[in-house]
Length: 425
Image 1 (tube, rainbow, N blue to C red):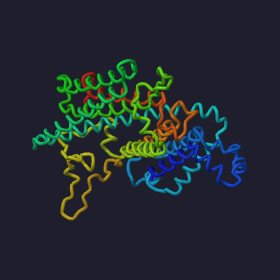
Image 2: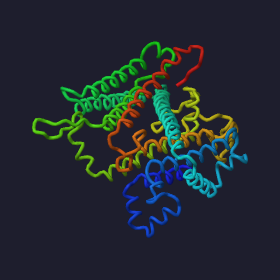
Image 3: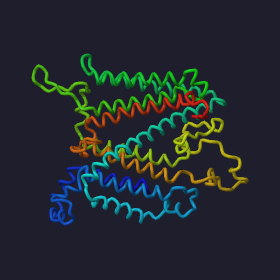
Image 4: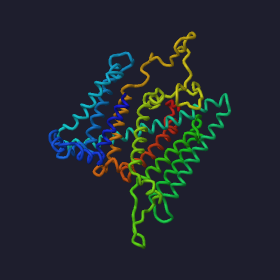
């Protein structure tokens, strides 16, 4: 239900960022200008469209999740009164969400509010990116640890690990080579060459660190599978960043405009802008919802707090990310046949942290707000220019590459820097 609320608000924001919708409203709604003046939304309802409207609506949604984050602090049982507030009253919550999103339009001194909220949104969006990257690093470690647990009884798991690792590095290497072919030239494209060289060198660095003797002594479950997965993701982010970089246009000897350092087939692929925008927006919302809903799993919640399951409790499975991957506690197993099989009955607390769940949705609201409004180039932002080139988007994605590398590298060297602490990944 919270995800449904999030989707409804995001779709509303997409409509607000669409010039086509604004034009259709002016043409098809009778007495449009009179209605706009009556609700004090401007002569042509300009206050209900554009980046400022998205800022206000996302402010209301962020406040909604912030309130529930405060209300659920310290909830240790799903049977308590505040737990019922989290798990029910959906109609009243929808009314509250609508009231908060609408009330944001009546905040006094809108210019100061938008200026301050812009920087709050940037900080919150960056924190959400960090959480996404932490979950990716946790997933990589969990994958390797789970499959390594199966090697004790079946040597075929070694073959599976080797095959997947080889596939990961093949994808990463092939991707970097293709990026060098299509986004660089023999002369020029110095920036692209530098970024590809730096990111490729960082992939080699984390791979070498993962299998170095000093890291293996402290973390025997560290391997090339994790670094291969991180390298694939960094390759994707590098491609996405270079695709978002504003193109450089020069005139050739015939006086024609020529774009440099971009694939020549890029114009053919982006002809149908509406299709690209719809698919891209859907994929973005799906990725954000996955990151938000992953916060309801115990393993991810524990991983963000630095707690991991013991390797000896792992049960190796191909689809390890679904279901319970830890051996059952004998005390929690049913005594006889016919009894319900309960893996976790909340004896030690709720299945997931309610306030953390709402905090992740709060940060996701800020991330969606900044993404829809093209980060800091918001003046010319619209849903139709959502996936066009922008320096803001380029640097955000490139910074995400380096942050992902640093987070994974820290999980490797942290036991060496702090030998007195216990780390387990």
